[in-house]
Image (cartoon, rainbow, N blue to C red; front, side):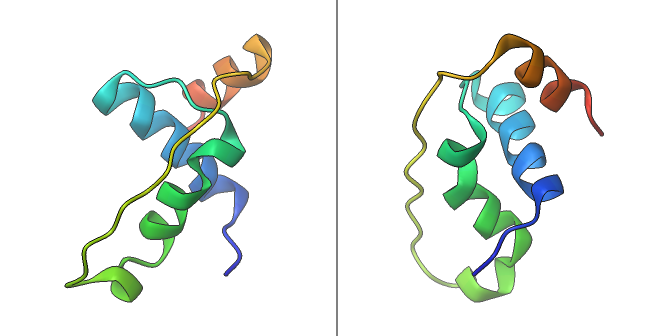
Length: 67
């Protein structure tokens, strides 16, 4: 499954805003996959591994400010 860049950025923002978790884009990829295709995961138990906080500060600010 491929996940588009906009959904990955959305996942990074949501993790920061909702659970105060700083994650790098590839670390938020599993969560982004669920956001992009929720129908594939409907009715199932889902665990997302979120990792990595080593992201460039400028890139991270850009990701957080993108809507």
